[in-house]
Image (cartoon, rainbow, N blue to C red; front, side):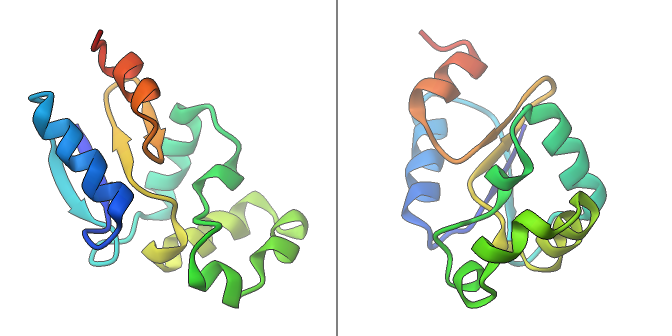
Amino acid sequence: MLFVYYPKCTTCQKAKKWLEENSIVFEERHIKEKNPSVEELKEWHKKSGLPLKKFFNTSGLLYKELKLKDKLPTMSEEEQYSLLASDGMLVKRPILIGDNFVLVGFKEADWKTALGIL
């Protein structure tokens, strides 16, 4: 399993702690040091079943600076993928990638369900 996160993010810290407490084995990837590629984003998006907008860190400074709230609706999916791949800080985190699922953001109930934890 791949855990894509930003260490200074409190939600990411909480998710990482939760994974460790539940003895989940995972590989870590710092999202700012290694941005997701367009190919990865396309694969994750498809596997997640979520709208592409859910992959954007809408509360981030960069999102607000670039005024993406107004620009996203008129952008093509390809443009959105390229934009997300350009800077890890635009991507919502944490992301947990398993064989059959991709979880974006940390919602404990969703993570429990995906990982089969009762």
